[in-house]
Image 1 (cartoon, rainbow, N blue to C red):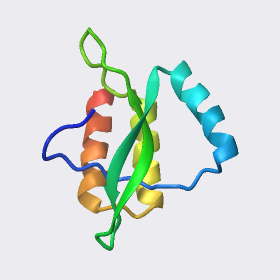
Image 2 (cartoon, one colour):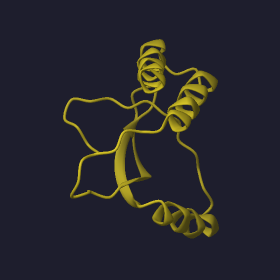
Image 3 (cartoon, rainbow, N blue to C red):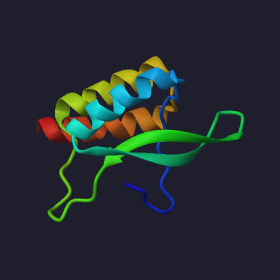
Image 4 (cartoon, one colour):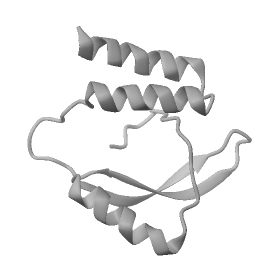
Length: 98
């Protein structure tokens, strides 16, 4: 969910139009909805992108699972994202295992 002043690192991919509906179905099945966001690339250029995010819940926010965090750490390392981001994700992962 959006948080003023927060930064989220990640990778963006171009998905063919014929596949976006399939992706939407998978995301909806996991209670996420499509949203348009502004992203900034490593060169400082702004882009519009589509993401899927959890729908607001009336209950408490659930933290990501250890498996999901491990995938985020692995993907962040693969795409050579900033070390501070990777360490912060690793700290969250370690906390879920404690």
